[in-house]
Length: 162
Image 1 (tube, one colour):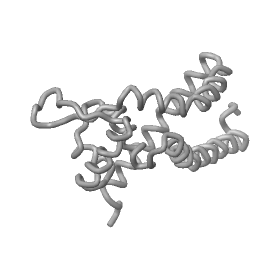
Image 2 (cartoon, helix red, strand yellow):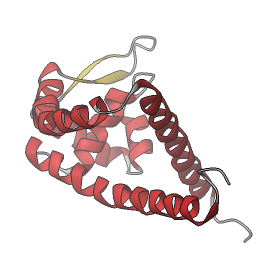
Image 3 (cartoon, one colour):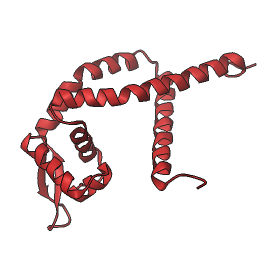
């Protein structure tokens, strides 16, 4: 019997599932804690994250769609983030009628400073991994992320079998 089969392998897989559940359960608390450290609301932090992680420049309408809020609410949110120095409006690169939202250097610096203790701890944990183990963990995390993204996309399409 190989290492991954039998009751021991099943127990380890169950423990991985439970550990993932624990990780998903603590993630919103980390998000809220980071927002509090930055003195912004959780939705504002999500907006900031969306603008920095988007492959294409976001405007207020696209941001509203991704946040699931009305454009008017997104405008108020963006105004708050601009006033706090976390976002700036700039001309859209390909459409002069639109504006793009960009995180400021201050926002990047503030987020980095707020996350520094967590970054140091994660670096210490990953630093303990040999190259092969690190590659396995990386592949696992990417597959889990894709699985979670698929789950969200499926839920946005509506319930199955109805």
